[in-house]
Length: 589
Image (cartoon, rainbow, N blue to C red):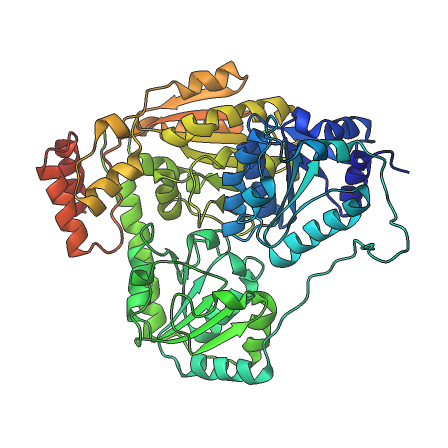
């Protein structure tokens, strides 16, 4: 029998299959922390350096495993620190439960130290379920509902525990009386398939289409085989939203790569020339990279009916599980021979990869960062887990890094926050200690949170069966993506006082933590650096001395963007000469 509410909390989490909790202690959760110390080891506590990291790790756990991630923080400031990571989870539909401390019930409303209205604070990020546990008899059903709702709706939930409740005697089974709640832990995800009528309507549109484009996102994560079968049946091309990059291998001839600002010319052409669009599990937001309204007939599959016909006015909007829905569609789809459309797609895709290699090998000072990712592609170990931060590392991973089947990737898609990549990768290693993990981070994100997150990895890495944990830092001493956005979107030259990042020796810092620290600044050394990193028997930090002026042009540049860009240079951008050299190199490809 559990002794206190804190003890029973961990008992119930174990019954739900929770294996670890990411968090940071504080006196607002003393009753929970002391219970963890009394536990029999069934739940692992991962101590982070900052509560934001705990939320990112819980989100990363959910991204790589599909399971519920759990984070724990103390009252007041600790709870506040969770918010960014929780919003990251919520906006990308990742199931995360936040367990948060609070001041004693008798002190609430008394302007007590660290007293914050946590119910109001968490109401937006945990909009589907956030509750304060005011009595021990609530613990069972609050924990059960928090996990059940997080799993069922793939969202964030939160339970707030006043510290006096944490230490109260547990009530494992509420009395059989009016006003008590009696919950259980059994859960299975429903299999949702559209009606026969709607499947026939969708099949009719797809069978009539002559130039079919497929766009996949994270909702198609378990449907790779079915997507490939549909693409072959319809002789379609497949573009990938960023969250869907790892779903299909990049070496398939009809997979055109990423779509959008980080995308490829092949994907842009696919969307601009198609007459039929099949969108699967994606809420890709940028409509200018989709077909023009009226250009294409549309079919969409999404498990969430509120996400249907949101980016393009679909002719048939199917509510359903991607795998089951595609399986139900396949017998209704007619086969067709290889035709001009598929050949055109494949030629554009081949050309895209040729141009990508040429861009990666363009000269730069000191190093073209794209080359690092291009050279890694052929060396990526099977079943690699890749975490990507927000910034130019996202762009280069999206375009230059080829993922194969069985690999996984995590990135902050909708929130696009800086700082989560190392936390994602570390969480992935806890879940899959026998698989290699990679984190790609810009120097801005590294100084924001990454340096601290490396300390967490240094604490735990020796327990991993496969010690390969490689962090690549794009060290260009510039908040580079924002600098490019200033030029292309605002027509403003780079502002050094806001954009320049202090220089830092990331390799030396890695060595300080007991890792291998490597620095690369010459293109001739890239291959050997990857070889050394992949052969290491301990984590590795690679300081990539990247040229900040290597341009990553979108697949289609508008007249307004071009005008803004050249106006920014004309206004006296401090890097204009180096940028113009890079523009010249790319234009001569």
